[in-house]
Image (tube, rainbow, N blue to C red; front, side, top):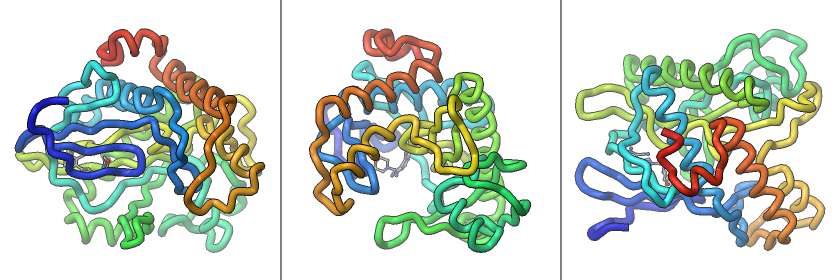
Length: 286
Ligand code: Q0N
């Protein structure tokens, strides 16, 4: 990495640096988290898979919404990005009934203020995708809020632009992925505002870390679906009897290898490119 690169912060699995007044560097590590805990064992190339997928989507969705991508670095795990003023809410789009959405629906028939038809089963596809904004709570956990509250926080016009962009991006990604055997059950977008006041897509987009990916093969509503990428890790962690508080367990080699294979498979299915070609020349995804 270059000269005066200032570290701005760490996410669970990514690092953020300032390059200059206008540009940031987002670096994806090979760390993996499960049940909200970062495990001590990395998954080789996971950061490259996520960065390559984000860059792929950014390049293909420019016409749907502008995004912060300036350059994909030759290391395959770093994105140079435009600095934005980030909106203080995350935009979650859900096309299927899973996770907290399914929980809320069973209790109230609603998901974050959206009334849904009666009789839906766990993992069912929704009649239309819905937007369920969230804020970062003090604990670092996401707190679901209504769209009305998100509009008050962001400003009504900015929120409407962010919501419309998020819905269009999800519809594009979900359709593309389904044709390649992956269900994008839901996904989280982070958007910001640029110097000209335009609402711009930031962060990562439509990756397995920011989304729920399910294999289309074997999809069966009425039960929880296996995670496309993390199921081996979750299953193995459950078998060990780990109580899901830090520190997490070291993963055995077969779980590391199986999980790396799933990330690479997601990359190859979605991009249509051999991952080996990405490693030789990351710009092949652009
Ligand atoms: C920004 N976050 C939260 C890396 C990701 N383009 C941007 N301009 C200004 N700020 C941000 C971005 C972006 N993307 C986004 N923090 C600052 C997500 N981070 C968490 C840490 O890991």
